[in-house]
Image (cartoon, rainbow over all chains, first blue to last red; front, side, top):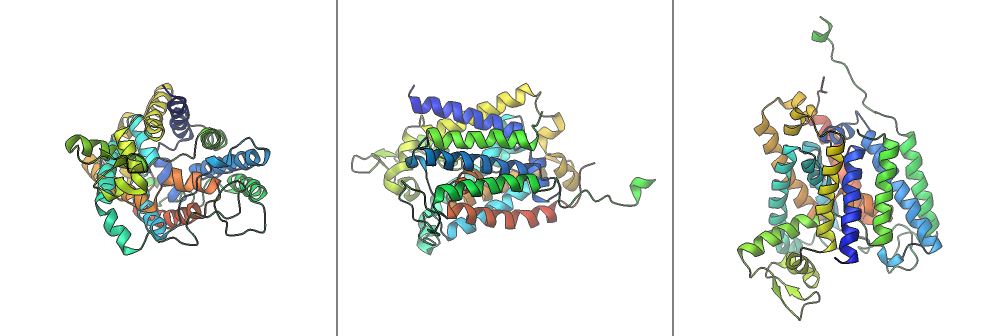
Amino acid sequence: MSMKILLALLIGGAFGFALDRAGATNPNLIIHMLRLSRLHLAKVILLAIGVAQVLLFAGLLTGIVDPAHIHIKTANWGVILGGILLGAGFAVSGYCPGTSVTAAATGRKDALFFIGGGLLGAFAYMLSYGWVKSTGVLAKIAGGKVTIFPIAGTKYPALITAIPGEWAGIAMGLGFIALAFVLPDCLRCRVRKPAKAAE
Amino acid sequence: MTLSWKWGGLLLGLVFFAAVLLVKPIGVSTQFVILDGILWDAVNPEIVVEDPAAKHGYASPNPYLNKGGGKYAKNVANPLNYSFVFVIAMIIGAAVSAFLRGGVGRSERTMPEIWRANFGDAPWKRYLAAFAAGFVVIFGARLAGGCTSGHMMSGIMQMAFSGFLFTVAAFVTAIPTAIWLYPAEEA
C-alpha cells in the first residue's frame, strides 16, 4: 500500500468521523441551519474554515505547508449556476455530496436514495458536458483560478495584491472564528403556534 | 453524541488543514463521476482505454471523462487512487462514529423528523424527494466544479474567489428554499 493510499484512509476516515460527530450527517441540523432556526452547523462551518485557514496560512508563513499543495478552483458562471442548483437540492434533502455518503453510513436510508439520484445526476452531467461547454457558461470570471489575496509560491493571480496573502489569510481566518462565536444559536428562533397546543 | 459546535468545528478544521498539509484540499463530488465511470466501463469497456498519447495515459470517448488529458479516465481505470479511497474511508469513519454513539434512531433512518413534521410519514415521498435532490445537487456540483467540501470549505480556507462565489450562490438559494419548504418545526 502506497503512502498516499494510507493517507487517504487516515484523513478520509478522520473526515467521515468528524462530519458525523459535528452533526453534519444529520439532515435535521442542515435544514434547521438553512431555515435559520438552529445555527449549530453554521457555527461549526465558520469555526472549521477559520481554524483550517489560520493553520494553513501560518503554516505557509513558517514554511511548514508546501504551497504546491494549494489548489484553487476555476471561477466561472457554472460555479454560480451549479451553486444555485446545489443550494436548492441541499435545502430539500438536508444532504450535500459529502454528508450524503457519510449519513448513509450511519444507517439513513433516505441518504441512499440521494446517492442514487446523485449518481444519475453525475451521469447526466457527463453526457451533457459537451453541450454545457458549448454554451459558454464555463468561461472564466475574473481570470478563473484566482485568490482574493496573493499566496507566495503559487501560480495563482490575486484580485487584491496590496496585502500579502499569508497575513490576510490569518486575519480572515480569525474573522471567521470570531463570526462563529458572535453568531447566535438561532436567528428565526422557535415560533410557537398558538391555538390547539394550549388545550 | 453530537459534539458542541466548538469541538465539532475544531475537529473538522483540523482535518481540513491536515488534508492540505499532507496531500491536497478535500473534495468529494468528483467521486460520483468516477463511480459512474467505473460502472459504465464495466458495461462498456470502450469507455476508458489506455492511450499513451494522453497526458494521464488514458482516454475516453466521453468528453467529460476525457477532459484535462484523461485525468478522470485514469482514476476510473485505477480506482485505488487517493481521492476515491478517501471517500471510501469517509464512509468507514462515519460508520465507526455512528456505531460508537449508538447509531441513528429507527424512525430517523427513513426520514429526518423535520421532514415528517412538514410532509407526513410516507417514506416514498421522502425517498422520491431525496432522489430528485441528489440528482440536482450532484449535477449542480459538477457544473460548479465542486461542492460544499471542495468549493465552500476548501475553497474559502484558501481564499479562492470561486469558493466565495459558490457559497453565496448556494446559500442565497438554500435559505429561502428551506424557509419556504419547512414552515413547521418538529414537536
